[in-house]
Length: 211
Image (cartoon, rainbow, N blue to C red; front, top):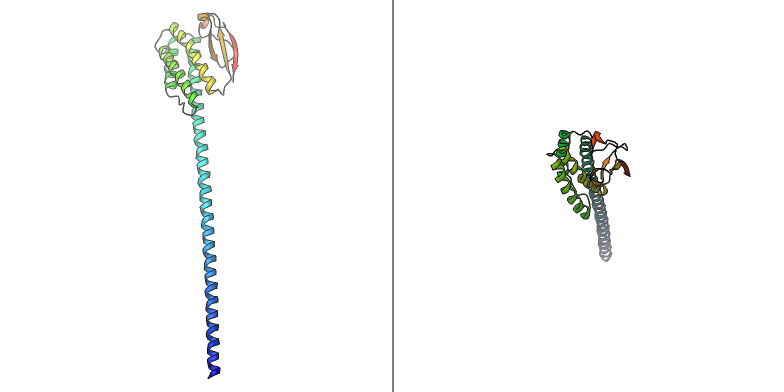
């Protein structure tokens, strides 16, 4: 009887010991799985954050490129319209000059200055406002008055290019005879005077290259 009691006590202690070890192993395994899942979740969140930051940077770069493209397009179109006006005055063609003046006025009205610095925006707004006024007068004036307004308009476009820059090589040309001396811009070195046309077509000189 005494031996049976001892045996029962030993079995009971062994069972308790095994149960304790099993629970401990189970808890450790559960903790390890939980830690693994948390590490994986943290890794996924970190990856998502990195991906989000990359998308944000890509969007910023894309927006900057769009702003830059818009900026270049506006400046280019102003030059295209200005050169068309200059050529019409060289040819002493009042109607073509008037149409070119109207087209330039529309282009200037749509000029987007948002991609420039605050100081540049203010300067450009003043330049554009003045240039629009002269383009408007050219659109409805006789040849003599068209050329008068073209002189000041040319100064406005030169001031604009000083801020926007240009992808094309431009030639600032100068006629000493017209109105005490008057300048204009051309994409060609050859002198073709917009202030006198065929009367004094070659009167003038290249003052400087702009590029």
